[in-house]
Image (cartoon, rainbow over all chains, first blue to last red; front, side, top):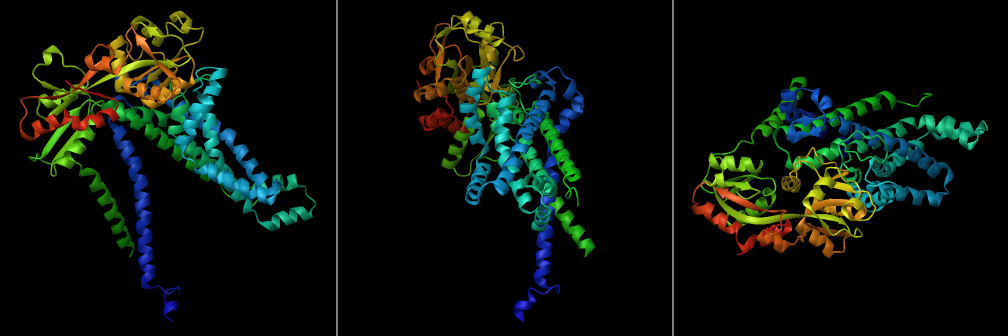
Length: 292
Length: 276
């Protein structure tokens, strides 16, 4: 009788306490996200009020100590690096998940999945350090200095690959077995099954992985800072150094004051807007299986 | 019930808003010092202040950055007790009393395999402004020069630019770095690189077999001793300044900051303690 009391659906005290605790947690999380964006916006307000929103895109260069605040090269840098990394990592991640689920022998699949999970857990600064002492000198042999857009893309692709692979993998694992059996009984080939049944119904998981990966790529700071060269310019080739918005903040915030500091927060606001756009896009494209 | 939920939500939000506004400074208490100024000096003074606080319970020391000029202005106007200034005082600044805290120097570094041993001021200026783009023009091998510069606002950049009379817009950098450690790793990875880092950091790295070498400037080899006695040109004194002859707690703190008890902290920041 007493044990029933806590688990029947009849509203009891424990339910009410739980409901309020959950509401509290929800409000806390929601207001934290809201306050964070509000704080960034407030910190960038002084510079916005002083020079307006357009000079961030029309000023001749980024020399904040000399009142030049062009953020466009950094915005381009962030977009190029993140897009390049996603273009490289997304197909690889999906292929890796397919290999793991449909082609690898069982023991190898398990070992392989553990390996990918391990990759996902390595801190970004370690990737950065590896990039700086191994990858950059290699690229530098092709064309100095080696610290470049390409180095940034490669490091980021390596970092987001495990995220995409793991989420694609669990998306594929959740494809209803009935669908696959039905397909197989119709005499579909393995590739036919994958292409016509597995990939379409795993689409939400795959898209979620790509969005998460893209989000990580947009926000990644240390690894990119260490390998991308950080010169403020719109790159014209893969071997040109670039600076991302995040690297800009990390490099200059410690020493920035007044307008300079505020302009860095403006960069942060741009990043926040990019992330919001990304989340919105994921809601638009990430829904349900294509054939459902 | 619905109304209660809203009240709850509002209560949390207003509490959060309240938190963000309560950062105002309290009134002056006898056990409190305010130090403002140079962002080069602030990190180490922050550490010194923490140690001083732990030795003197009840004392609060507030260290804020804002640049050398603000440090002096605040001190003159009585907004702070001590100003931090990352250079020697000029003649027309005699109204402030300087207490030398440490000396700081930077050295040009290049890859270990680069045989170039010495550069003049004019050569450094030419390389960093992009007028010269190959080591062969500086008496070295046929190798493109990769200029490694520091990010805007860094104190080493400030000292470098003021010594070579360059504006930060003049520098044509190929790579921009943050701290000394990243500078050393970058130079070690690029055969044609030239960059500059704090002398202390360079000596430490070379002691640990990093693939870099330090370049002499106008024939003067950069050493910590040269920084100490001022004979190496790319160096400066970091000062704490006060408005009038210090008394009580202020005097005690200045004596502590100049004593041997903080030398280990200075060395952590690659600064040279002043011993005389």
